[in-house]
Image (tube, rainbow, N blue to C red; front, side, top):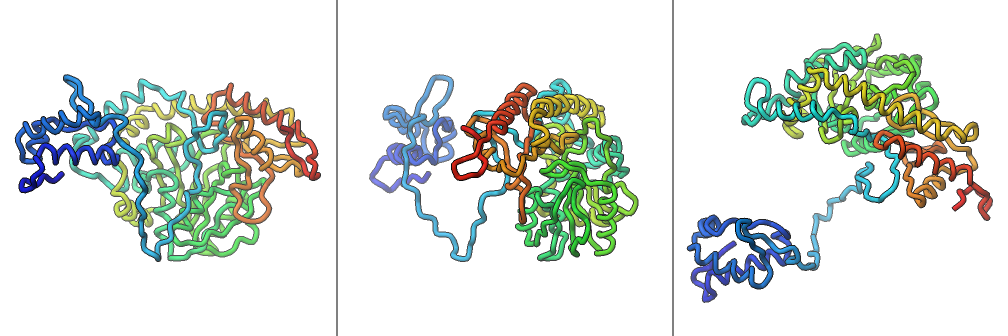
Length: 480
């Protein structure tokens, strides 16, 4: 705020007018606190009396509110609607559309969102202890120190992640091969920077929309490859620089890549001098089915496979933490990309997660979460069982989502629309398809629901699918 001592308007009136204008325009938000009169007077170089007169005027006209002992703040109703100003952007600038991800849900109902895990089995005592420990100290120095830390991640945290991957997934590695990332997409973004401009990249079809968009935004060329019951179809794969796959629990169909297909993909990488990104986003959750070894652990993986893991699905998305297990030769380049991108992961989160990993708390949490999600999985399978054999539930033996394949005469998009009208929200597989005929299926993410919600939602799915009737146009449509 600027006060003009040469102007005929008194200083307190100038101050009041500027504060009022800021409140009316929303520049000072409703309920925003104002500095104390002494602080404001010192900042403006005026006497406290000038500030006091201005504040009294603004309180009198309702712009500000004040109470003894609580200070002064902008009144709730002070801001008024203002006309949007025309923004003139450079003519050459083309703004991208919305990101292909599912945002937070605000519509009430049962949301079968894939990629979401529940937090109900978190050990509150261990969680609080982890953050209290992190607040007291980061290994080697105070948590509030001025050092940004290692862009690849703190050594203690990287070592703890390497040990956890060995226990949970049988992938032998060490801290020197681990780079901490803000999640799987962040890791893919780092890897995309290593590729020559305009590189062809194989992606699963249907597949992870956001991963494909990361590659497009990096200037590369995603090449869709069909997925069947054994995962990525490896016969006749074209040359490419990179292949991005989800072999443990394909996203979104839920199938797992067979061992012959895994070995064939490794041979393809050797033949075409390519790299493979193995996104193991929910590999810790298996229900009765024996786990297949990660691609990165197979003989011949060598310097070809970059393994992506995440703690966001295991604990909560709030930690925003993933990691890459990379060939040693690639770690410096990934670390450089992380340093230039955002400087590296925050050290408080790393310290808290190190406590959970080294204290065995995360292993115990995984066991609890596996039982919890196993109950959800069993409830979904049991409740949808009456739809067989016309409809088939796939991908149910692992992960946090399943895929309900519908008969061809019952379009998945129409079923999804009818379910939404009834307060049950699901996705059709066509949303994840990048070319060709999409699978006629519904994607059912159950990780963020209770068992009761899973059962209620699944019962509604049964009612809609069973109640399908011939529409006047002759195609199948759900009964309203």
